[in-house]
Image (tube, rainbow, N blue to C red; front, side):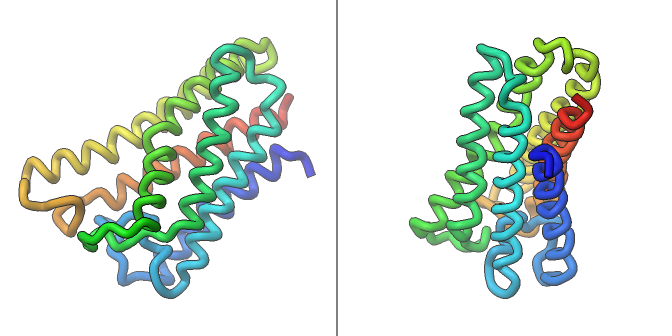
Length: 208
């Protein structure tokens, strides 16, 4: 199987498992619960598998597009996505605590670090990869589509943090998380844009 197909399959598996968990764990309100919380309790192994699948999709995509990533932006993007892939595997290995739990375990802290790497830096790495790829004439024809899917990753991360900021302004006593901070759906929209970027870039590489 072409490695780009492998990337697409793993990204779709991630999205499918995430969608399935909404039905398997309806007690977790998706309007304010983070996707990482599906790791807790029953069916937690499915969310861990989802993170591993997402990490595998990044690794497979890197293998597929590695020769086309032109320096300097492309070289930075290569190793940045290596870090993101490691963080995704780490997010699956280190289980998060409930967002309402005010205690801070070492495992939860490690999960938080891994999550922060993915959430905060994926759009930056995608932008660098976009620049690196479009320097190649074969990719330049797809520049418009790459700009759109990369812009969506930025919209995803901005909407996520905007939902948190707006909620905390309305209720300063809300704390780190809770029913009044409606960041659940923005969190899901964000990760869908990230996975979507992987799928689109892998699909373009297949045509080349």
